[in-house]
Length: 162
Image (cartoon, rainbow, N blue to C red; front, side, top):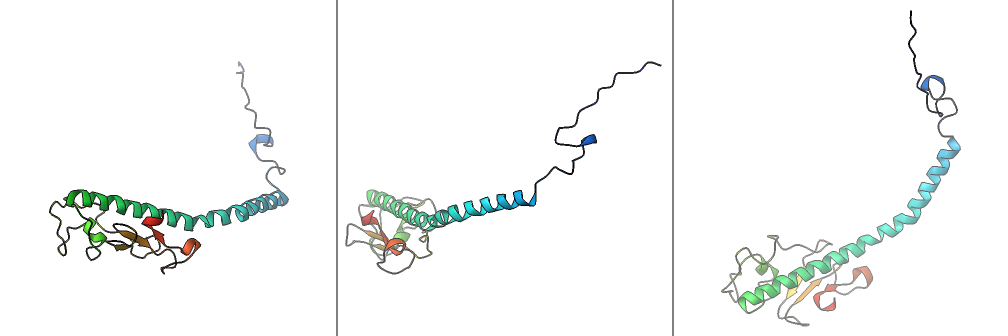
């Protein structure tokens, strides 16, 4: 009877005989503790920096939204020759006003893509005044404290101060 050549597949060097793990493979408790300590240290250093960015992101979001309102208001004026008054408010950008000065050439579909006036990132409505104290119109977000004035992250965000 002829004997066939058989080739044995070698197990990786980190495995014991027959491909089974040797008792020496794996991590020691000390190695795991060191890795957990290093990860904890990284989280302790990085987390405060990330957490502080939430307020910055909300402020940036409010500024972008105010700029969007400004653009929509300018388009409203180009079509109609005037800005909506305070009573008509920002709602005039999504629905043709029925009171005050009625726009003759109101754009079908309004002047904002979304069909509602968004609130500021802190959950308060934007304040719109026209004619404004600082220009043709004033748009204000009262910031995180929802009160006039404030400093730092509590400061008001206004269209004339950007």
